[in-house]
Image: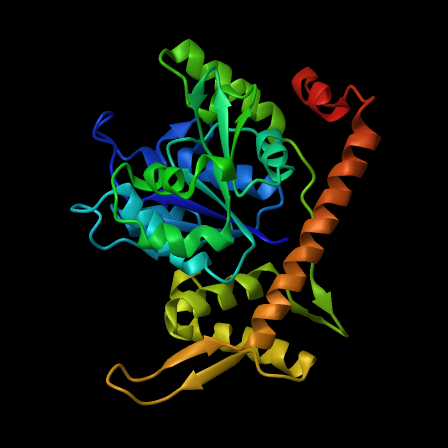
Length: 320
């Protein structure tokens, strides 16, 4: 099953009166931590919905293989409206989807993996009797969520689906509720999560005589798919237009089929779309990448569990 994640990062924190998305906690921003948490759990199809200071936020996350969508009306709309933008993109791409606001950056990888073991259509983590994030639900619920017109945002939409479809999952993860009222509490959460950040990172490339398909290729193609333009996709991931087409053509030549189809004409001057074979290839590549990453994590824990080369908190995690 393919799992995606929608991160909402469109607004400015009224309570803190600052741009929390780029606020540094330790040596990583809120936005970086949320993305890295999902990636560590093998969730590669990640969408972030931006709005306020979108250019600055998107620039800060270049290279993390995230698709950015914008809520241009972020000043006059609610978080649920941003969630709908991300969920609309995810429809038909994944089997399950996590949802998380960007200002909940301290949930643990173990919590995500625990949620993924559940078979209910909706999984809501609970810590100390408080509902938390990320929420996980079946992608088949997306149309019903998009049609919801009631109150209480996404929570209201999920509640309307029915309690029989919901798992309220107890977790010992204070980061799911961002319960950090003092600097001491905040530092405690930082220390817990930092101990989980040390992990192996592997890259997967498809090669014949030379490499022709990798993470950059996937990031480019995903952005073409969401933006409908190779030029805009290249700008989004900060490469030249000519380099973008070189990447696409090199992959098409190696594979022997088309990845991008261009549709000319119309009032807007046409668009570019990924082909079905391209989307299928991306899905298989990400399944392979996820399996390789999981195997690497397993071997990492086996090899380094008895070592004193890492901090005690890291050793304790990898021995579990």
